[in-house]
Length: 272
Length: 127
Image 1 (cartoon, rainbow over the protein chains, first blue to last red):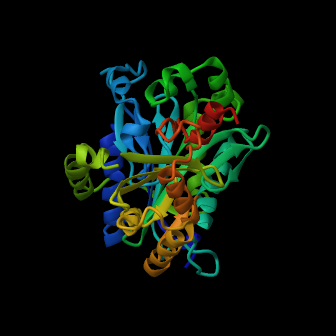
Image 2 (tube, one colour):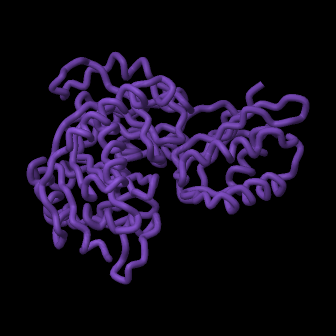
Image 3 (spheres, chains in turn yellow, purple):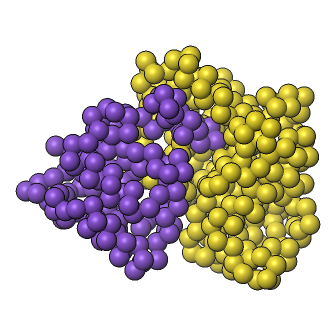
């Protein structure tokens, strides 16, 4: 059995807060592991905007908690003036999830099914490469040539600037890979939420980062969010068996539990 | 007294090691950073394996201990290896400066949208 034999559930672009977004990923992993639902691709946004940190990161070392608490996102429909902070189940670095500035995806699939044409299970690097290939195809459809940069990045070919970051975990026999596709980037805003000494937020430093990261808006300013999403939806499902689906009642209930039991707790978010 | 060292390992991931030393023995070892490890909970076992070891042990002894654990438990480290951990640990407890030349204090591993950690660190360190 190869990837082309998998029958997928696709959950179209939706918006949740950080806690529900990460809880839905975990609830979905559980339901995929139990066989209750099919392997799943989902697309989502974050409202309010949020900062997520990698599983192994220290929240207090990385994040300016006070700044997150008082920073209005300016772009969040909830307009509550808060940037949520959450620890992911995946490793990797801190990510600022701007409501307007990115599209996030998750792919949730049993390890035993995620195989090459010879039926050999894809390892971590291979599976990053495979799923990032779907993103690269989608970017190609909106006129952005991009390529995979191990371990977990996608860069624009013409500039070598990063346009997508990805992270993966494997638990209970299920792969969860999630990642972001940057639509816009505001480096100054991101720095204001991270624990970078304020004196360090110099124009020179911001310029140095801007030299190494890009976004859809910078490469193809005429391309809309809807067009990027449509391209991603197409590239993630191209050549695959799939149906547009919804969360089950059980998944939603479990996600609500996980929000309270894990993702909103100090024990989880400040565990390192 | 808390000892800290931070380094950017091959491939650009950040690894920070913190620990205490009491009566010549490592306590409270903590490994943080933007690396990957599968399963993630295994990091607690790596930390636990280092706790109780002599702060004067050679790097090779730390490497050996961690290697045994990683291989024995089937842990998969992505973006760093046990030598990075051992060397950063030794750097912390023997007074070496951390990667940012800050004399061991935890300074910065700022990341940003899409995981721009490497870029920010490069900018800060001027490298």
